[in-house]
Length: 184
Image (cartoon, one colour):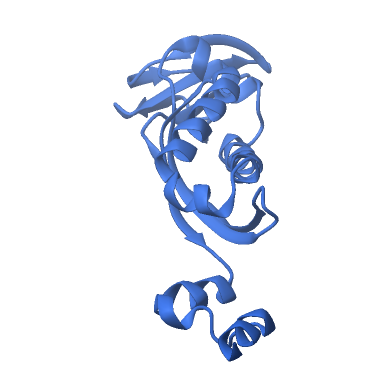
């Protein structure tokens, strides 16, 4: 967001704005050349292009109580109509931070409903569910979540080691029951 206080201003094709006179909304500003009265009038400008936002890595506990680390990326943009641009200014203070935090909490919830095995194969399902939930809330802020991708699902080290062993060595060392049956 940028704020324009000068007499003559221009908005680029990918920008939309609102004009406030003495702190009150007075109109929607489209791309092009504009003029205003400095001191009593201000134009606030929003970039309506797609913004790529990282969902930082975080520990998540699955349904079967396994802690995994997950992260992702999402693409979000403000809608370009007047009502939506007003919402990006008046309904939320820092929309980028808010949408990332919302994604983080809902990502934990999505993985919490699945077991580790389900989590490892359900990236697309999780991403689609997360996008739908984010779009529900983002609509109140004048935003659209275009896409969500889960980049990393990192299981604990012991599970990684166990999955890389060949099948015959997974049961090594043998349990006491296996040793007793082998002696017979």
